[in-house]
Image (tube, rainbow, N blue to C red):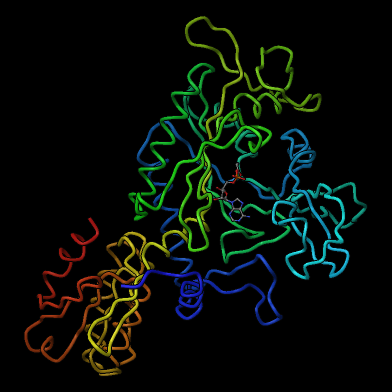
Length: 452
Ligand code: GAP
């Protein structure tokens, strides 16, 4: 069995409709990708699994879907306007641009020149004009992290639900960063999705909750099919912490290009709610907040025992959807030798993540009787609601099996002439390639059991 490489994954993703370079027909834009028919299903399945574990399976977390465009005040108060920068270096010879930490021995990786500019801070946030007049004053930021609108909605959600601290707010959505050097396929891109939870806790309990969420998130990634031996926890050194973080544990994954961050779990202290709250002086805030004289809302809550007011601390597990997709593809990808002259590529995704749950294949293309039975089976399985079921009316069974192995479809169902005689079909298992005949009546249970 051969494991994956980045080249193999990129090729599979294009060939089978998972991921395409964005604006490809015009030469593409670096750091932007489009998810095709299989990619959108895989990504949705991953996001649904996260939402299920965060929101549906708990009673202490609520969901949110906030706007992407944000008032500049949000990112002034969050600290991003002043500190969300990377040090940028220009090569004076070939005019290429680099992040300072990507240069070795102060040499341009492109032309090897040492004639470089001094590093200067480059803010990673994208801006856009709001309204018809672009006077530079009425602009919005495209959020560089999804969580800030969780903080600005803190009081709305407290007032509209019956939650008390400790509780969390979960959100999945797009984030944008003008990365200086996007690279490694969908690992570092300029438009990506995050799955973020902000979990609000009483000061003093933050360490216990931080530990809890690190363990919880680790277990979750393993339950999605990530091999434990490909994961390492990294305690981020003090000098590398984001401006809001007291301590961060990164879940590091062995991506095809090396070990890098899949998710970060940060103790953001009372910095965020403290920086966005009105009347900061009314609270004893522990972190070094950004002075606020514009906010209209107080973000304090009352302690149950002594009724004193405090600003909650935040524990934040923040995962990248795109990095999750890359890690899961990497785990699932296998090249298997079948015999001396044949091999196959198979994507052994966990069934709940597979883009297509089952493919129904009439043995003979356009044979009305076989196609009608296949359609009925497809519609029946589709109505069970476990995800997309597909009718493959393209004839060649062998080709269909190969295609669905590469897409990661757990079950292929073949309808043939015996089906007309005795109401049986063939089910083929993706991983074992085992085929067996069962009756159409048994199929519903077979299918449901497979995904349980
Ligand atoms: N709210 C906290 C936050 O945004 P982060 O470590 O900057 O923290 C969280 O980002 C996660 O978002 C990362 O662990 C990563 O999975 C993903 N991410 C960040 N920048 C990314 C990029 N340029 N491309 C793809 N994913 C990215």
